[in-house]
Image 1 (spheres, rainbow, N blue to C red):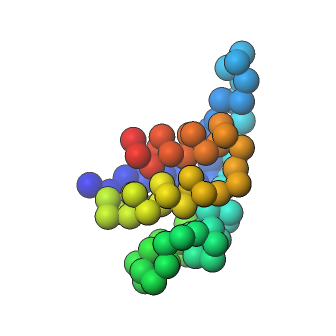
Image 2 (cartoon, rainbow, N blue to C red):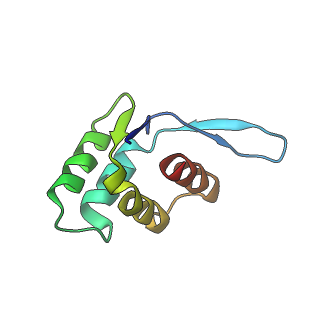
Length: 92
């Protein structure tokens, strides 16, 4: 079953006090998926990268790409709180 994630509005807890901040990671994630990630040669994954990059609403993530997307997120130079939240949503 596909899940929908709005990569333009990732709400992340950024302090022990519970403060949150909203991050837009759509462009960074799309670029990483297509150009710097370790997943190569999959046309569907490249199309998903483009969809995420240009998105302004939730994007359906097909189950077949969840592991690959999680791998790319794990390799990205993001602050830990953002990376944790992204992985939680993708794997959730």
